[in-house]
Length: 177
Image (cartoon, rainbow, N blue to C red; front, side, top):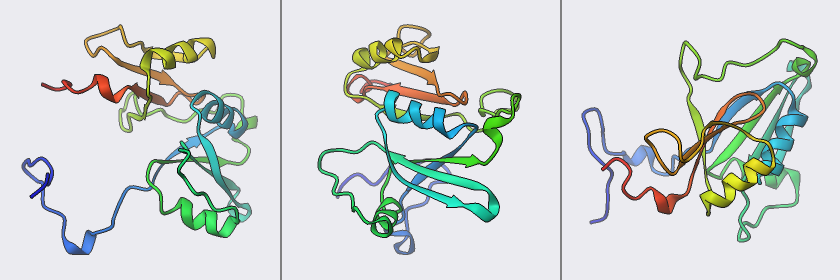
């Protein structure tokens, strides 16, 4: 029998009714989609899969992911929408129209008081190269890999101040031991 998950108080084994459930996306509200899209596509290397506009409610959704060469992404919008909602590791950026024109408007990042949401995480193939790339692109750091007690983990901020953890999987084998 294979690995069935770590067990702690409150953990219950998945049931047959939940077979096939998986996390599709995480949503972040953004003030200015042009600035956010520039950050996530250029700096983080993500691809916009789909934009959905809801004119009556005055908001737009942008769905992004890191595309690997083996992805077969449908060209048709309808098929691509279905494909997008069947993936894992998708980031949804939600833009409420007009916020980009409000000078003092800002979303709560979840890390200031009262704390709530903390961060998203991007895994990179080479942490040192990623740090050099972030430095070259004037990315704001919360924590560089050499700072603090957790070495080999960085935290950066996106244009709305949301934290993004940056990790290289191969460096984390002993984490928590």
